[in-house]
Image (tube, rainbow, N blue to C red; front, top):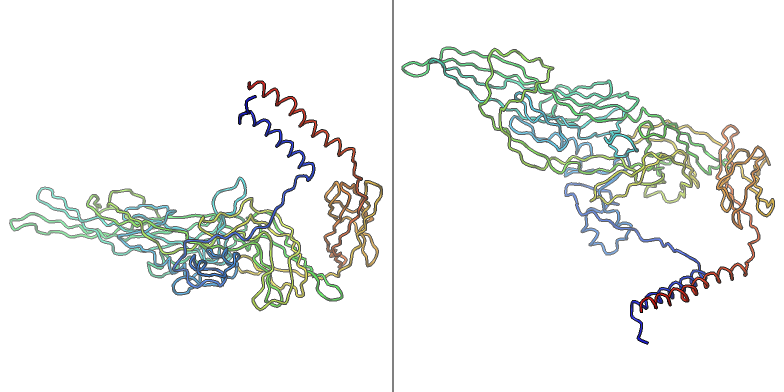
Length: 610
């Protein structure tokens, strides 16, 4: 008999593999082990030479990581663009160690704009008037507010600006002016020449939020074009639109000279001058929310035992929609050395990588009639005339940093100063509601994680010896914080076997013996995952495993000034005896399947091959 080929051996090998798998599965069961991995390290490779002083926990560039022989993976993973608490930027930026607001404001004031050139950003909506060219007013950001890229399903894709009640808006008005060259015409020995000159050019900007309007003060032309717009006491109560308008008013002098031809040449006979006012207006808009006007009720319940503080329950009640809920940043403890930090953070990055600069080259294709009527100041002029040609080139703009609101952690956490090491306060439980389905997107080069944000509705702090004193929103403004005090009572959570399948749960005040009614008890090993006690503090559940575990998470009864402490208990049933007959039946079924495969399929397959 010839030896079996590889093709003929495959079914036999397959059968043996199946047999081994069945045996191993029966003997050991299916098991998957998951091991915790080390910190993933992502290093940003785009260090900014003008970033200035950085907080000590941020590594400035890749070389620092590579040249540090003892750096840990956790510290290496912090090499990234910087983040900071929303209400307290603690570091400085720029070559002169300015604050973030000063740095942004200075760069915006240095934007080039004059009569011959204009630089615009990628999102600028440019417009051309009669003499004003490449005009745009662009909202670049805010000094006191921030932006968010958090979006809910089926909503507008525009990013919201979250603004405080008093703040500044960074918006640059940029333009160039193209003046027509002299024009001369000759008719029957008479030459008429028209020259143009600008005698005055002024800029006015205004900011509108909802129904309120703010205008710029009387300063220099350059400052009016680029300095931040300040607003106070914004009162919009819902999502609204922020509009920035810029109007350039040009006083154009038109000089008309009439000459006649003589034997000695052209002789000037009449010179007249006239002026006209040309007004050109541009605008930019963005959706905004004045966040301090949104709702958020904050109450801390201090749970004491014999006068000693044991835990804090912080309740944060408000709308569960992103645009209607006031967002808090942190709460300070009495000592001032600890904070309860929210999930929010502000991420700053360079918004614009380049800009386009255009240079005007006037030509002689347009002449004005000296009798042209005045143009009203508040009227937008949009005549499109080939006054000039434009050459464009890409240039690096001033560094404009964008502040973006992100979620950097999934739940609030305790932050301590370097000198605070004694306290063991921890956040034990957090109840949250989702605000956005996805995390805020970040630049691919940024080594920073962001999680889908959730609004905290209840935060429980344990092992704490001091109360919270002040709650701050994301702009640093205080949020009213109410305080209540309750006394902690121990709880008795008993589990009793009612029969072979059911467990009786009883929840009572261990100090007074009173039943604790209408409270949730969380279960493991039962058919249901949670049950509510009746008026007698009793509930009956059906077990699903040999052991049933019950957990009461604690609750405050403000009306009685009592806090029922958490409690946990379990009850075990006798394990189901091992049934050797069932095991043999299962094993025999496996062997029968393998034997049938070997006896019937393999010979048939072998004969068919021959």
